[in-house]
Amino acid sequence: SGAAVHAAVDLGASSGRVITGRLEDGRLRTEEVARFPNGPVAVPRRGSDTLHWDILSLYRGVLEGLRAAAEPHGGLASVGIDSWAVDYGLLDADAALLGNPVHYRDARTAGAAERVFEHLPADRMYAVNGLQVQPFNTVFQLAAAAGEAQLAAAGDLLLIPDLLGHWLTGERVTELTNASTTGMVDVRTRTWADACLEVLEGPFGVPVRGLLSRLVEPGTVVGPLRGRESVGAAAGAPLVAVGSHDTASAVVAVPAATPNFAYVSCGTWSLVGVELDAPVRTERSRAANFTNELGVDGTVRYLRNVMGLWVLQESLRTWREQGRDVDLADLLRRAAEVPALSCVVDVDDPRFLPPGDMPRRVAELAAETGQRPPADEAGLARCVIDSLALAYRRAVRQAAELSGRDVDVVHVVGGGAHNTLLCQLTADATGLPVVAGPTEGAAIGNLLVQARAVGAVEGDLAALRRIVAASTETRHYTPTGPTGPWAAAESRLWS
Ligand code: LFR
Image (cartoon, rainbow, N blue to C red; front, side, top):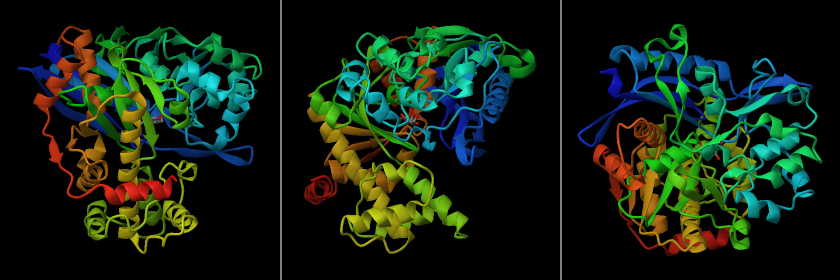
């Protein structure tokens, strides 16, 4: 019956999905019921382009997906929404949307972090929010937007999953795991951070306190879905605030059997780190640009953002635009034939952040570091994948060292778990066993947290992870050679 079926809305940078889940005999059976495209739209504004999300098309995809999810069962037991982090929509005093949300890859944030640090030095800010400095952290986006007409007209700021949740239920809340990526949350108290809000209100004149709504921990029931005309049989189902930051949900779905694991949540981004009980706010941690994002059940996701498969995705797009349609599966097969570590670059170079011609940027970085740029497409793909594996090695080892957490195994979850070359090279580079899967990690973590909130399942994170392990086919990789060449490449690149 419908009472047993849960629906996860999972929005990624290149597609949105609605996935249903049903618990049976300690296993979670999932089914993808809708998939719709997502991507940046560049819109001219005062002479330059602004990158936006097409939020209304996403909302339509969510509505259609929820109808499709509910219809065969005559209803849903619960619904949860997760998406990428940091971005927001503004509502005016009539609760009308003020413009399309701006994409975190938009160039408007250039220099904003530095301007904020003039008023709240980076080390003091890190002591409060524990957050890796990324130009797109919401606090810097708001500083960049200071003085804009839309901000002046705004009555509410809602992060993307909370905005969609507001349209579905009429409620306004801010879910905590996602809020922790804004830079405006105190990582120890899990409440809004006065020091960060004050700098926006004073020097930047952004009246941010008036825009924020109540913080809720993941697992909170937000309210029933309204509007049978828009969501069909899903109307009345409780919306649960899950780990609404996709990475928080993905980490719930790591099928780890021990606490001594590292994870790579691998999609457009690769989020690489460990799960802790308390944040690490040391100066060394800040210098290494490690982040403390808040997780489900009081945990901390101690990790670094690695640029991820984005560089490869954008390369494919660039080639397509140049009239060369490269098949990904074929490309990866050919990349596997290229000798390891022929050319590696720092994938976290900020030049990779905006959309654009990645093959050219890789060639530039290779030349700057005295390497011969990749000769062809397979070489480029191999360079990106080697470089990712190398960045994973560095992040896993630093996370372990800076946090004191031993790491015996690396779990790869998300779409990247399909990429056998990347998984094998991750084992080779780290010298650790790699367990790959599930590929729909965020949706699975989303489903389990909502199911628990409505009483369909019980237990702590370890119990939820046992369900994931029982429900997922994982692939196992062991290192095939010595880590020496990877260590050497690492010290060459980051000496
Ligand atoms: C991954 C992710 C990362 C976040 C980035 C931008 O999808 O949520 O965790 O840093 O997107 O929001």
